Image 1: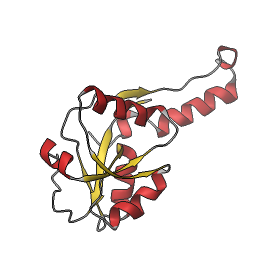
Image 2: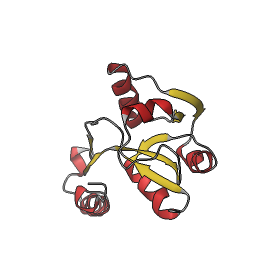
Image 3: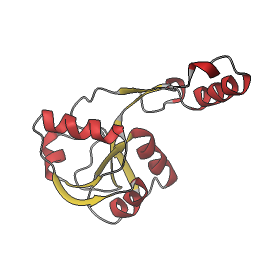
Length: 143
């Protein structure tokens, strides 16, 4: 469907904001970290671990939906799926700024899966087409 990436969400007017953060700024900023069920954030955390990058973690939360309130009212930053950062940034551009992380993160592919017995089933094909039209690299505004 598409290649997933990460972005840094911070409040508008954050003193360390830059379109692409420096590693120094990324390490200086205190972070809000989401510990949600799911593979995407696990991949990001493992990447930081492999590169021996240690953030200043000030807060842990189990939900991505708590991030806008936390970030908009503090100097904390959260690294979140880029689609989520763009959504919050568009929803309230006067409250949020979206920055690129200071290092190149390999994206990972998000794919559809279905059981082979439904491969030619009309309703299943229709649903797969709908999902593919909604979620694909052609509609990805990040790049």
